Amino acid sequence: MLIDTHSHVNFTAFKEDADVAIRRALDEGTWMVNVGTQIDTSREAVKFANQYPEGVYAVIGLHPVHTYSQHLDEEETSFKSREEIFNTEEYIKLGQDPKVVGIGECGLDYYRLPEQTANSTLYTSREQIKQLQKDAFIAQIRLAKELDKALVIHCRPSTGSQDAYEDILQILDVEFGNNKFYAEGISSRQISNFKWEIHSFTGSPEGAQEFLKRGAYVGMNGIITFDKTGNMEAVVKAVPLERIVLETDSPYLTPIPHRGKRNEPSYVKHVAKKVAQIKNVDLKEVESITTVNAKNLFNLV
Image (tube, rainbow, N blue to C red; front, top):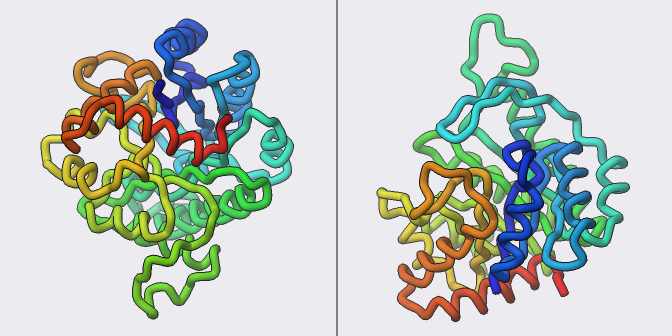
């Protein structure tokens, strides 16, 4: 058994065959957690979760790129983000559903901030956009604590920087009462017993340790199968198997051997195989331990 802890079958990429993709994964013994990025995709995730008695769950929340509107054009996606103000009451209502197991994906995304121009307005000022993202992130941390749901964090720093990861850590320390953490020095003390993960981690091995010290699970996906820098291999080696959760981030980040195709939850097995290869352990061990991790993170039964 495997659990894809972060998929988006609730996105339009699966409009024509979502049920087929979900059934394919379930038939192979793979459960999934579909993650919302706005209120509408969050509702879709909950809808899908309730169509299946077992193996399909939902995470609801507001992605940082949707805290303002801009055109996003990357290798695997091109769209205009639709601005949304985080509405706590609407997400509380949605979060009452028993198939909702987490809040997110929320966090900070500095990679796609618009360039500053002479005609910049409130919503194109980089610092003001960062603040919009931080405000929405903090609201979702507090909602996760209120609803006792896992927190799923998205973080993508500026090119050549770890800035967003550093800001995420600082916010977490403040929100969990450890704002003196840095001045006192890092200890083995976790920020709390609160369950949370850093999704699609691409930072440094040293950065991963900062999250681990605060109790995080670390999400690994198809990037580890095609990264040529050596960084992701180093990260996988640095993170104990007991803190790794597997994910696809489908329809994006398709792993080898399916590069060039739409990603889907059933492909999480290729992430598991790569983790086993890098750590030089049996695949069954990876499957067993990461499944236990995912169940613990999301309180799945």
